[in-house]
Image (cartoon, rainbow, N blue to C red; front, side):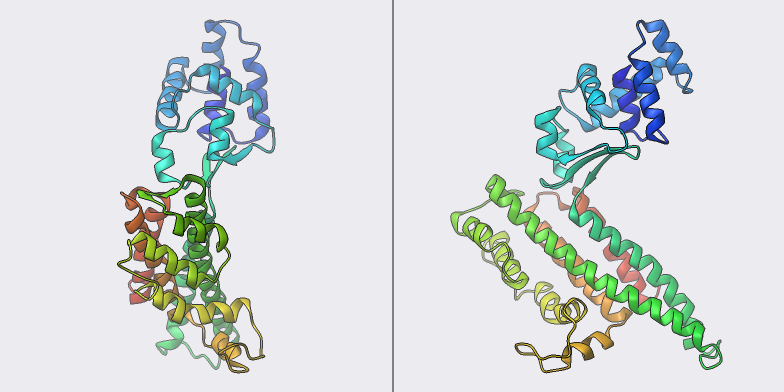
Length: 334
C-alpha cells in the first residue's frame, strides 16, 4: 500500500501534502489484502485497478523497480518539500530510470517529485516556457494594437489605451530576446557539461581537444563556445560562421546586450549611445527573428549531435515553438 500511495503521488493524484501524509500514515496500518481493498475503494478505485495503474507507471518510467523500492521512496519523501535531485543521484539513491527518460531529458536534468507528480526539470525547460508564454501574450498585444494600425480606432483620442498595449508589446519583445539567448547559453553549457562528465555528446565521442576546451573555456564568449561546438558536432564541416549561428550572434546579440548591459557609454567597437539606440529599436519583428535564430541554432546542433533529436524534450518543444513563431511572424495567429 505504501507503493500504491507513492505511485499516486508520482501520478499527480493528490491535491495537497496533507492528503499524501494521511494516506501514507494509513498505509502503515494496513495489515492484509482485505483492508487494502477497502482503502483503495475509499479513493474511488479498486485495489486491482490501482495496482494495474501503478505497474503501468513503473514500466513507463523506471527499470528494476518493485513495490519494495517504491515503498522505500515513499518513506523518504519530505512533506511540503518533495524531492529534487539530478538523474544520476536519484538512480544511485533509489532505482534506475527508464531508458526513455534518459533519452528524452538531458543528463543534468533533475527528478522532481511533488504534489504535481513526477516531473523533470532542466534550464532549457524554463527558458522554453518563458518563450512560450511571451509568444502567447505577444499575440494578444498585437491583436489589441491591430485596430489602431488599421484605422478602426483613433490613437490620438485613445492615447493611454494604445500606449499600454505598445508597452506590453515592447516588454514581451525584450523578454523573448532574453529567453532566446538564455536558451542557447544553457543548451551549449549543458552539452559542455555532458561532454566532461561522459566524454561524449549524444552519439559523438569527444576528443581531447574538445574536452580541453569544454573544461577550460566553459565561460568563454558565447560566440567562441558556439563555434567550437559546431565545429566538433559537424566534424569540421561547419563553423560558427554558418547560418543560423552567425545571424544569431551578429544580428541578435547586440539587442541582447542592449537589454542586459544598457549604457550610454561606448564600448569596444560600439560608439557612445549605440546601445541605447539599439534598445529603443526593439520591437516584435526583431524579437521574433531573434527567437527563430535561437530555436534554429538549438535544432541544428541537436540534429548534428543526437540520433533522434525530435524525441528529446528540448527538440520537441523547440520544434513546436518554431512553428508558433513562424505563424505569429506571418500574421496567421492574429
